[in-house]
Length: 148
Image 1: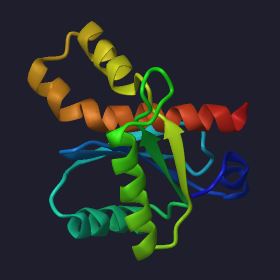
Image 2: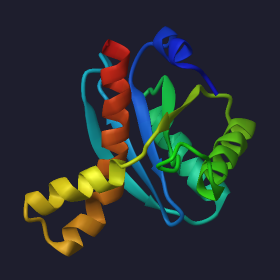
Image 3: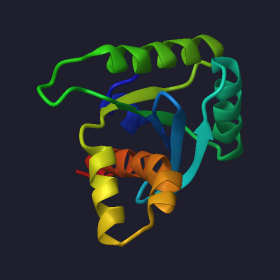
Image 4: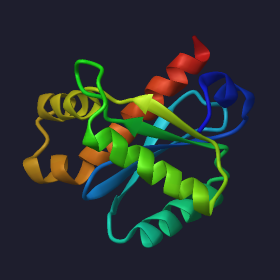
């Protein structure tokens, strides 16, 4: 896993990932790293299938690094979900030596859900879109930080 400085040293598009227990939300940045765009939601199956799908998207979009949302508790501590995400990244690195940057994703899903409620989006549409929109929110936070 890389640091923010290590991420700055890479060039090109980034892939954002909001890992959940049932889904993986994906978002992609443009090559200039200005804007994050929601891409898709992967329904989780087996790790090997999920990783293969993720690496296919990584290659097709010529991604330079993976940004993974880390579910830190509100008080800053790390719980079982945090360890699960770290384990996912460790296993991914065993298959593919790619740059991975972990980003604190506190409140990302809540912020996205609030925005969808304000837009009067139906419950069904919210369920279909929340994960990829959360990935986009996470990725946009990193893009904004890189420019700061």
